[in-house]
Image (cartoon, rainbow, N blue to C red; front, top):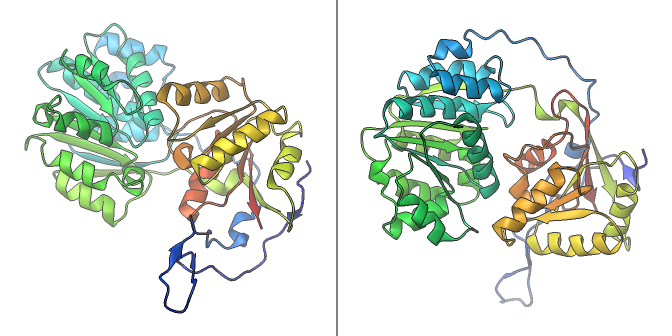
Length: 403
């Protein structure tokens, strides 16, 4: 494997917290775009450990112990679930018993089933109840919908998908059918509530998935607005990778004496080989990326760019060079976003070019490399980006371009 200009991290002076230049003694600061990352380069360099065999997990329950209806249990089996994962083993009994639950779990631990199965069972037993599930991105919301459809096959349950990028009038018509499950993103849910097309008071069950990410990308006010309109008697669950002050604020307002279930896998970075690629003065970053993507082992690659415009430009440049790539960012239509992700999942393209919208919640198998074409803004962003590779006991590689 060849890394152009490969180098070990060296210490360097951090940039100032604001990124501007003065044009005169009394002039006001002028913003010059996204500030440079303050992450020390040494944080981008780490050798992967050899794959560590997973310690066998012995669940306390089987799926039959949860009292699931026969058809639902059959759908679980058809989905390929044989024994509960740790988060399912702990969270499902609590949710079935009616407790509020906070689940601290990584992507890929089976947390979607951990909240869907109890909700499906509950609403089958109580058809008058409804459930609202919110996720930070359209892609994650769609993944939840796909999982719901698998578990809900041939069951008398309806769902409505309420996300941006799709025709809101179609969603309004779907809501008029009074579906038991509404799955969407906070922005579109709030829009529908303000149009008086969706009544939060009808939801006796609410799930917030990837709560910390929702707050990171600015949904705090929307979530608080929606929580304020929920009925007092409700059951709540939310799942998050981390707990911080902002998450705790939501917990206090949404939940009643919640039980915390913490299931964390080994550190994300242990099975990821991390290194930097130094871009020399006058060198073209796209030329360097070209050299990497031309190597056979770069089979399924996610390339992260900080801006939507940067992703679009890079897509055009790589396409002109003959590479099979697709792009995913917030300015694309929802159909284009779904098409890009599907092309990447099915191997129709070698590389997915994306903003940090793909850094959380997107589960794609066998990503060989993550390339940070632009450095992330924070170290947490970096960890989430590189976590798309090195999964399921396999070694992955993460490379970060630095100047």
